[in-house]
Structure formats: C-alpha cells, structure tokens
Amino acid sequence: MEDLLGHELLRHSRLLHVMRGQLSTAAPVGLDYAAVGVLMTLIKCGAKRQGELAELSLLDPSTVSRYVAQLVRAGLVERQADPDDGRAVQLLASPAGVEVGRELFQRRQQLVREVMSEWDDAPKQTLLTLLRRLNDDLEAHRSHQGTSFSLPPTASPAPDTNDLPPR
Image 1 (cartoon, rainbow, N blue to C red):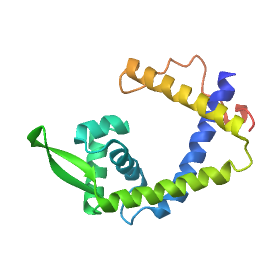
Image 2: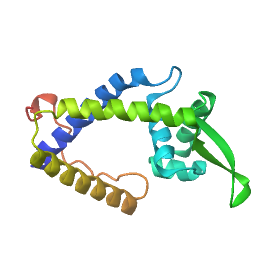
Image 3: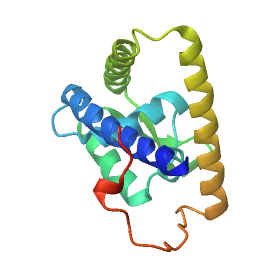
C-alpha cells in the first residue's frame, strides 16, 4: 500500500509542478514563481521579519532573501521598521503586491474549480480532510526530525521505472 501511496504522491507532486508552470505565466516578469508563495505568505500573515518569513514559508533563509529582493524590485513587497525593535526590518506586501496576490489566488481557485468540476461535495470534503491530516502529519514529522527528513537506508536498489505501479 505504501508503494502505491508513494507513487501517487510523487505523481501528484509532478502534476502540481506542471500546473505551477502554467500559472507562472500570470506572475510579473522577472519574478520566480516560487517567490509568489513568499508574497502570499506575507499577504496571509501580515508583516514579518525575514527569518520569520523563511520559517512560515518552509524555505531556507538565503532562498527567502533572494525572493524578497525580487519582490521588492518588482514593487510587490516593502520594508518597514519593526515597531517592536526599530533596528529590525519587517516585510509587508505593498498594495500592488496584494493585488497581484489576489489575481494569482483567483487563477489558482479557478483552476481547482475546473479540475474538480465533476466532483460532488462529499468526495471534496473527504479529500480536504485527508490532505489536512497528511500535511499535519508531515509537519509534525518535519518538526521531530528538524528541517530535513531522514530516510531509512534502502535494503535493495531503487526500483526500475518498469517496476513502478501503473497509474
């Protein structure tokens, strides 16, 4: 069973990557689409220091630094003094950033609506419940393991692609 689940999770991940690529055409020119996730985190969570933003985004601080620089250059994120510590800087979505975020969110929601248009509410609710549980368990595992997953040693060589379960 775990082999089939692993296969479907990998397939899901690849399909999401393709869909992100399709959605990336809506991102402003010169902006990595992954930077959009950082922008969305700021829109959802409000002003944050860069370290907090890295933690919330589940990204390495150097990666967040690069994305923040892109977002600032594009005028989608602004820097402001931290009200609790004037020496520190907080990042927040600019009005233009909020608008870009709103547009990209609507496009993503439209894509989900199209893909699931023939699904009844009960299976959608089941999927939502199971995805939340999986994500919660992955986050808990990540917390227990630190920032990286530790995989057990493999007893046998990796399977040939012909050995993978069918779709």
